[in-house]
Amino acid sequence: MQLGVNVPNFGPGTDPGVLRAWAETAEGLGLDLLMLSDHVAVTPDVAERYPEPFFEPFTTLSWLAGITTRIRLGTTVLVLPYRHPLLVARMADGLHRLSGGRLVLGVGVGWARQEFEALGVPFADRGRLTDECLAALREALAANGGTPGVPIWVGGHSRAAIRRAVRFGNAWHPLRLPPDRMGAVLAEQELAGHPLPGFAPRIALRLTDGPVEEAGRPAGVGTIEQVVGDLDRLRRLGAQAVVLDPYDGDPQETRRPQEAWRALTAVATHWRSAA
Image (cartoon, rainbow, N blue to C red; front, side):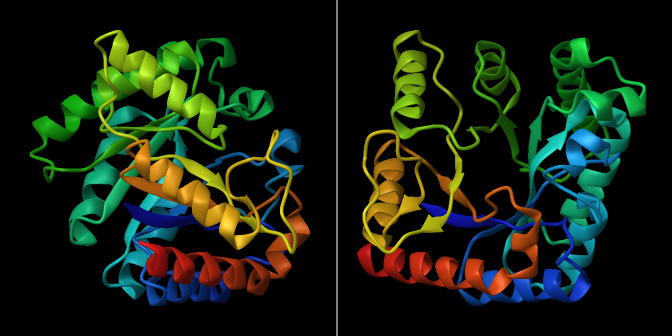
Protein backbone atom coordinates (compact mmCIF):
# COMPACT_ATOMS: atom_id res chain seq x y z
CA MET A 1 0.00 0.00 0.00
CA GLN A 2 1.34 3.40 -0.99
CA LEU A 3 1.51 6.28 1.50
CA GLY A 4 1.14 9.95 0.63
CA VAL A 5 0.57 13.41 2.08
CA ASN A 6 -1.80 16.26 1.31
CA VAL A 7 0.40 19.36 1.45
CA PRO A 8 -1.17 22.72 2.36
CA ASN A 9 -0.74 24.88 -0.76
CA PHE A 10 -2.41 27.83 0.94
CA GLY A 11 -2.31 29.92 4.09
CA PRO A 12 -0.18 32.64 5.68
CA GLY A 13 2.82 30.39 6.28
CA THR A 14 2.99 28.93 2.79
CA ASP A 15 5.47 30.21 0.23
CA PRO A 16 7.73 28.63 -2.42
CA GLY A 17 10.40 27.83 0.16
CA VAL A 18 7.95 25.99 2.39
CA LEU A 19 6.47 24.09 -0.57
CA ARG A 20 9.97 23.05 -1.62
CA ALA A 21 10.69 21.89 1.95
CA TRP A 22 7.45 19.87 1.96
CA ALA A 23 8.48 18.16 -1.28
CA GLU A 24 11.98 17.44 0.00
CA THR A 25 10.60 16.07 3.26
CA ALA A 26 8.01 13.84 1.57
CA GLU A 27 10.43 12.47 -1.00
CA GLY A 28 13.15 12.08 1.61
CA LEU A 29 10.83 9.97 3.76
CA GLY A 30 10.20 7.70 0.80
CA LEU A 31 6.53 8.65 0.53
CA ASP A 32 4.78 7.71 -2.69
CA LEU A 33 2.42 10.68 -3.19
CA LEU A 34 2.39 14.44 -2.71
CA MET A 35 -1.03 15.98 -3.32
CA LEU A 36 -2.50 19.50 -3.32
CA SER A 37 -5.93 21.05 -2.89
CA ASP A 38 -7.82 23.18 -5.42
CA HIS A 39 -9.57 26.54 -5.31
CA VAL A 40 -9.71 29.16 -8.03
CA ALA A 41 -11.53 32.11 -6.44
CA VAL A 42 -10.77 32.49 -2.74
CA THR A 43 -14.20 33.78 -1.79
CA PRO A 44 -15.12 34.39 1.88
CA ASP A 45 -16.43 30.85 2.38
CA VAL A 46 -13.13 29.46 1.07
CA ALA A 47 -10.90 32.00 2.82
CA GLU A 48 -12.23 31.08 6.25
CA ARG A 49 -10.49 27.72 6.02
CA TYR A 50 -8.10 28.02 3.06
CA PRO A 51 -6.91 31.65 2.91
CA GLU A 52 -4.51 33.37 0.55
CA PRO A 53 -1.96 32.90 -0.71
CA PHE A 54 -3.48 29.94 -2.54
CA PHE A 55 -1.13 28.32 -5.02
CA GLU A 56 -3.05 26.89 -8.00
CA PRO A 57 -2.45 23.11 -8.15
CA PHE A 58 -1.48 22.57 -11.79
CA THR A 59 1.16 25.30 -11.83
CA THR A 60 2.44 24.32 -8.40
CA LEU A 61 2.63 20.62 -9.24
CA SER A 62 4.46 21.44 -12.47
CA TRP A 63 7.03 23.38 -10.46
CA LEU A 64 7.31 20.59 -7.89
CA ALA A 65 7.80 18.07 -10.69
CA GLY A 66 10.99 19.91 -11.60
CA ILE A 67 12.44 19.71 -8.10
CA THR A 68 11.49 16.08 -7.36
CA THR A 69 12.46 12.88 -9.11
CA ARG A 70 10.36 9.98 -7.86
CA ILE A 71 7.30 10.97 -5.84
CA ARG A 72 3.92 10.96 -7.60
CA LEU A 73 2.10 14.29 -7.72
CA GLY A 74 -1.63 14.86 -7.59
CA THR A 75 -4.77 16.77 -6.70
CA THR A 76 -7.05 16.04 -3.79
CA VAL A 77 -9.30 17.13 -5.21
CA LEU A 78 -9.54 19.19 -8.41
CA VAL A 79 -13.02 20.75 -8.61
CA LEU A 80 -13.98 19.67 -12.10
CA PRO A 81 -16.85 22.14 -12.85
CA TYR A 82 -14.47 25.10 -12.41
CA ARG A 83 -12.57 24.46 -15.66
CA HIS A 84 -13.44 23.37 -19.17
CA PRO A 85 -12.71 19.64 -19.49
CA LEU A 86 -10.58 20.16 -22.61
CA LEU A 87 -8.38 22.55 -20.64
CA VAL A 88 -8.13 20.03 -17.78
CA ALA A 89 -7.23 17.29 -20.25
CA ARG A 90 -4.52 19.43 -21.85
CA MET A 91 -2.99 20.44 -18.52
CA ALA A 92 -3.23 16.97 -17.00
CA ASP A 93 -1.70 15.26 -20.01
CA GLY A 94 1.08 17.82 -20.23
CA LEU A 95 1.94 17.53 -16.54
CA HIS A 96 1.83 13.74 -16.71
CA ARG A 97 4.22 13.68 -19.66
CA LEU A 98 6.59 16.32 -18.28
CA SER A 99 6.81 14.62 -14.89
CA GLY A 100 7.59 11.21 -16.32
CA GLY A 101 4.12 9.77 -15.75
CA ARG A 102 3.75 10.83 -12.12
CA LEU A 103 0.35 12.58 -12.12
CA VAL A 104 -2.65 11.38 -10.10
CA LEU A 105 -5.79 13.35 -10.92
CA GLY A 106 -8.12 13.37 -7.93
CA VAL A 107 -11.42 15.07 -8.79
CA GLY A 108 -14.61 16.15 -7.05
CA VAL A 109 -17.76 18.26 -7.34
CA GLY A 110 -16.81 21.07 -4.93
CA TRP A 111 -18.64 22.63 -1.99
CA ALA A 112 -18.01 26.43 -1.93
CA ARG A 113 -21.23 28.06 -3.13
CA GLN A 114 -19.75 31.58 -3.27
CA GLU A 115 -16.82 30.35 -5.34
CA PHE A 116 -19.19 28.75 -7.84
CA GLU A 117 -21.09 32.06 -8.06
CA ALA A 118 -17.85 34.02 -8.59
CA LEU A 119 -16.92 31.71 -11.47
CA GLY A 120 -20.37 31.81 -13.03
CA VAL A 121 -20.95 28.08 -12.57
CA PRO A 122 -24.37 26.94 -11.27
CA PHE A 123 -23.86 25.39 -7.85
CA ALA A 124 -27.01 23.24 -8.06
CA ASP A 125 -25.76 21.61 -11.27
CA ARG A 126 -22.31 20.69 -10.00
CA GLY A 127 -23.00 16.94 -9.90
CA ARG A 128 -24.29 16.81 -13.46
CA LEU A 129 -21.46 19.06 -14.64
CA THR A 130 -18.88 16.83 -12.97
CA ASP A 131 -20.27 13.76 -14.76
CA GLU A 132 -20.19 15.60 -18.08
CA CYS A 133 -16.66 16.85 -17.42
CA LEU A 134 -15.43 13.36 -16.55
CA ALA A 135 -16.89 11.88 -19.73
CA ALA A 136 -15.36 14.65 -21.85
CA LEU A 137 -12.05 14.47 -19.98
CA ARG A 138 -11.59 10.77 -20.54
CA GLU A 139 -12.56 11.10 -24.20
CA ALA A 140 -10.17 14.03 -24.72
CA LEU A 141 -7.25 12.24 -23.09
CA ALA A 142 -7.81 9.23 -25.33
CA ALA A 143 -8.35 11.30 -28.49
CA ASN A 144 -5.24 13.39 -27.86
CA GLY A 145 -3.11 10.31 -27.50
CA GLY A 146 -2.67 11.06 -23.84
CA THR A 147 -0.10 9.07 -21.93
CA PRO A 148 -1.77 5.85 -20.78
CA GLY A 149 -2.28 5.39 -17.10
CA VAL A 150 -3.22 8.88 -15.86
CA PRO A 151 -5.16 7.67 -12.80
CA ILE A 152 -8.43 9.45 -12.01
CA TRP A 153 -9.45 9.24 -8.35
CA VAL A 154 -13.07 10.24 -7.77
CA GLY A 155 -13.82 11.91 -4.45
CA GLY A 156 -17.06 12.03 -2.48
CA HIS A 157 -19.19 9.49 -0.67
CA SER A 158 -22.76 10.22 -1.77
CA ARG A 159 -24.61 7.66 -3.86
CA ALA A 160 -23.94 9.80 -6.93
CA ALA A 161 -20.23 10.00 -6.10
CA ILE A 162 -20.00 6.21 -5.73
CA ARG A 163 -21.70 5.71 -9.09
CA ARG A 164 -19.33 8.30 -10.57
CA ALA A 165 -16.29 6.43 -9.22
CA VAL A 166 -17.52 3.13 -10.67
CA ARG A 167 -18.30 4.66 -14.04
CA PHE A 168 -15.38 7.00 -14.58
CA GLY A 169 -12.66 6.42 -12.00
CA ASN A 170 -9.58 4.34 -11.44
CA ALA A 171 -10.14 4.60 -7.68
CA TRP A 172 -12.64 5.86 -5.11
CA HIS A 173 -11.05 8.65 -3.09
CA PRO A 174 -13.15 9.36 0.04
CA LEU A 175 -12.01 12.28 2.17
CA ARG A 176 -11.86 11.78 5.96
CA LEU A 177 -14.63 9.20 6.05
CA PRO A 178 -14.76 6.83 9.08
CA PRO A 179 -13.24 3.41 8.31
CA ASP A 180 -16.49 1.62 9.17
CA ARG A 181 -18.32 3.68 6.55
CA MET A 182 -15.62 3.07 3.94
CA GLY A 183 -15.74 -0.66 4.62
CA ALA A 184 -19.53 -0.67 4.35
CA VAL A 185 -19.46 1.11 0.98
CA LEU A 186 -16.88 -1.30 -0.39
CA ALA A 187 -18.91 -4.30 0.80
CA GLU A 188 -22.19 -2.89 -0.52
CA GLN A 189 -20.71 -2.33 -3.95
CA GLU A 190 -19.30 -5.85 -4.07
CA LEU A 191 -22.65 -7.36 -3.10
CA ALA A 192 -24.44 -5.24 -5.69
CA GLY A 193 -22.11 -6.47 -8.42
CA HIS A 194 -20.64 -3.00 -8.98
CA PRO A 195 -17.26 -3.15 -7.24
CA LEU A 196 -15.27 0.03 -6.98
CA PRO A 197 -12.31 0.16 -9.39
CA GLY A 198 -9.86 0.95 -6.62
CA PHE A 199 -9.68 2.44 -3.14
CA ALA A 200 -7.41 5.35 -2.14
CA PRO A 201 -8.73 7.28 0.88
CA ARG A 202 -7.51 10.51 2.42
CA ILE A 203 -7.48 10.54 6.22
CA ALA A 204 -6.38 12.94 8.95
CA LEU A 205 -2.92 13.05 10.50
CA ARG A 206 -2.86 14.25 14.11
CA LEU A 207 -0.73 12.47 16.69
CA THR A 208 -1.66 12.66 20.37
CA ASP A 209 0.34 11.86 23.50
CA GLY A 210 -2.32 9.55 24.88
CA PRO A 211 -4.86 7.21 23.32
CA VAL A 212 -8.03 8.72 21.88
CA GLU A 213 -11.35 7.07 22.78
CA GLU A 214 -12.19 4.74 19.93
CA ALA A 215 -15.86 5.69 19.75
CA GLY A 216 -16.06 8.36 17.06
CA ARG A 217 -12.29 8.63 16.62
CA PRO A 218 -11.42 9.79 13.08
CA ALA A 219 -8.93 7.65 11.22
CA GLY A 220 -5.44 9.13 11.52
CA VAL A 221 -6.07 10.78 14.91
CA GLY A 222 -4.51 9.30 18.04
CA THR A 223 -1.28 7.78 19.24
CA ILE A 224 1.24 6.48 16.76
CA GLU A 225 0.00 2.96 17.51
CA GLN A 226 -3.60 3.97 16.75
CA VAL A 227 -2.67 5.70 13.49
CA VAL A 228 -0.51 2.81 12.28
CA GLY A 229 -3.41 0.52 13.20
CA ASP A 230 -5.70 2.67 11.03
CA LEU A 231 -3.33 2.29 8.10
CA ASP A 232 -3.22 -1.47 8.57
CA ARG A 233 -7.02 -1.63 8.68
CA LEU A 234 -7.26 0.36 5.45
CA ARG A 235 -4.68 -1.90 3.84
CA ARG A 236 -6.80 -4.91 4.79
CA LEU A 237 -9.85 -3.19 3.27
CA GLY A 238 -7.93 -3.12 0.00
CA ALA A 239 -6.55 0.41 -0.11
CA GLN A 240 -3.92 0.81 -2.81
CA ALA A 241 -2.89 4.16 -1.32
CA VAL A 242 -3.66 6.31 1.73
CA VAL A 243 -3.11 10.08 1.73
CA LEU A 244 -2.41 11.64 5.14
CA ASP A 245 -3.80 15.14 5.70
CA PRO A 246 -2.06 17.04 8.54
CA TYR A 247 -4.10 20.25 8.11
CA ASP A 248 -6.77 20.54 10.81
CA GLY A 249 -8.53 23.72 9.71
CA ASP A 250 -6.54 26.48 11.46
CA PRO A 251 -4.68 28.59 8.86
CA GLN A 252 -2.05 29.46 11.48
CA GLU A 253 -0.93 25.82 11.30
CA THR A 254 0.72 26.66 7.99
CA ARG A 255 3.22 28.82 9.91
CA ARG A 256 4.39 25.70 11.79
CA PRO A 257 5.00 23.00 9.16
CA GLN A 258 7.67 21.42 11.36
CA GLU A 259 4.92 19.96 13.57
CA ALA A 260 3.37 18.20 10.58
CA TRP A 261 6.79 17.04 9.37
CA ARG A 262 7.50 15.41 12.75
CA ALA A 263 4.17 13.59 12.72
CA LEU A 264 4.68 12.50 9.12
CA THR A 265 8.18 11.23 9.91
CA ALA A 266 6.92 9.25 12.89
CA VAL A 267 4.08 7.62 10.95
CA ALA A 268 6.21 6.83 7.89
CA THR A 269 8.96 5.31 10.07
CA HIS A 270 6.59 3.19 12.15
CA TRP A 271 4.59 2.09 9.10
CA ARG A 272 7.71 0.86 7.32
CA SER A 273 8.86 -1.07 10.40
CA ALA A 274 5.41 -2.62 10.86
CA ALA A 275 4.89 -3.54 7.20
